Image (cartoon, rainbow, N blue to C red):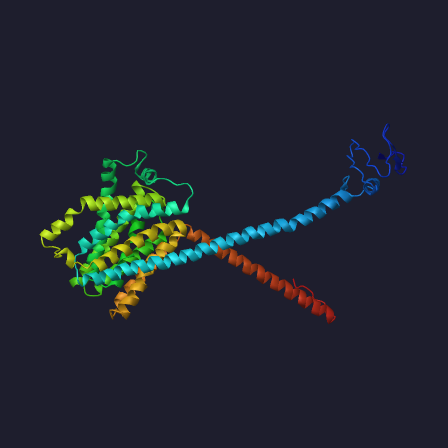
Length: 463
């Protein structure tokens, strides 16, 4: 072992090599035994280079020296350098996979948006065609609501096709019944939980169809978009949601659009009544959604499918008497069953069911905001069909009212932290511009100094 000793007499340090007693020296071709000392010297290989190199570095007092650093660390460094590209490659692969998943989710969301908008436009236009030969809005609503019974069977079919752990329909039904409470489904719970929502559901759709008898599909679909503003107002009052000034502005814009739509024909006639019916449909729809969130909370896709099928059963069992009462009182007289336009009615019911499935499935598969945008896109979709097929001419007041309502709908889609996110983005953008401007000034000053030195001039800073 080598040691360094310093004497107080001012003499230079004396370097002395010592051997531990009982330890054999290094023999060529054999590895030296491990030495347990404070230097923790590593084992020496066959050529002895590691040991010699370590002694030289230790004797000369190399800054930051650790025994075994010279050759062993270089070998470890080479191994770490060899492993670094692999880790970077795996990181790049993970980032690429994440980016690909995001792109697929967005593309799937755009496809869902197109399907949601098309199904809602198709439902509205199909109702208009049905009214030409069969003007019984409540019977159409009742018939279409019965198709909600198919929601849970379709969900269970998808569950069986996509999962490995199979469950019987009864087991899956009981599992999804937890939406109504831990005790599951009972007759009292069935009536207590399903009746209010079924009545609101029927009332919403019935008022929507009544409005379609008096207004164009574009006006009704635009007025129905006001339900987003009503949901915010009810959530703010009932659910104590966060107050947002921009959403208050959006609600005011929705109300302004409603007034302008009613004013378009002078607050009288079928137009005013149609506006009132459409606004009533939007109001009951907002009440339905707020009460669902209040009493049932958040639900997964299976629970939503269970709930829709339960409403379909309630409609079939308890509300079937209403169409009969309307028939015998001559409020809605449809003649014989064979004379009914079953093709149009099945088209309306099928598109309505597809719309409800897409809305609930789309929230699970993609971003919820895209589903709301799909509902909004039904307005220009209906407007295009009304202009091209039905040759409807819109007044400037109606166009302005429609644009104001749609703009308010878009403002309601802003997230709660939109102001904070916007301020952060603007601040980061301003900082980036400041840094770029500073770099440009630095480069220009360096260029100026280099030119001055090249010309033999000296730049003197002014006080």
